[in-house]
Image 1: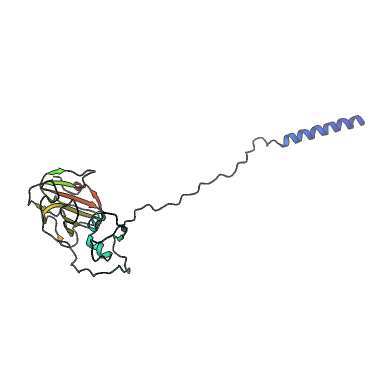
Image 2: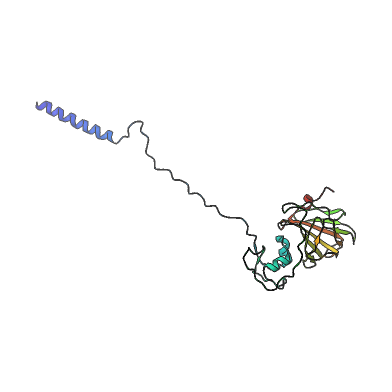
Length: 246
């Protein structure tokens, strides 16, 4: 009996050692336990659209230049900002480039002179179908260094409105353009006519497509020519895209 008890004790101890060794092994075929996946944090979209309803005046700016680059009338910008003297803007000044919202009271310095509303443009606010402003040859086309077309001719040649619109500027206040006319055709497009000898229209005049608005000249230019631009929302675009094939 003692012999059997001793052998039984040995077997029990061996079985205990074997079980303890197997206890540390994962069952065959069991899936390993993995930490839960880390979900990516969604990015919060940011508004990167340009803010075009105001403009901060920089050194060398004029109201005419700001109006040309924004596609707005210098007279309207002056009125929206209560400027009694449009020539007096200062660096750092923030100008409104859109009309006041309904119910909002703009700064009033001097009430504007009422003018009759121009006729509705012949095209909608998203398009422009123009005609050539002059029949002269194209001397220089639209490119990265030339914002429009240089059209040749002789002094006194007719300069025509490319489309129906309203005169938002007529004068010689923008350096490098000489005697200049700017027409606003709709909310999107303006056209520019520079270096004229004689201006035949004035600000706020309503003009018709093909109407003679100036006579070609060489003011602030190296020769007699018409510098013609089309601007879409203030940005220069190739005028030939809006003109018939010549």
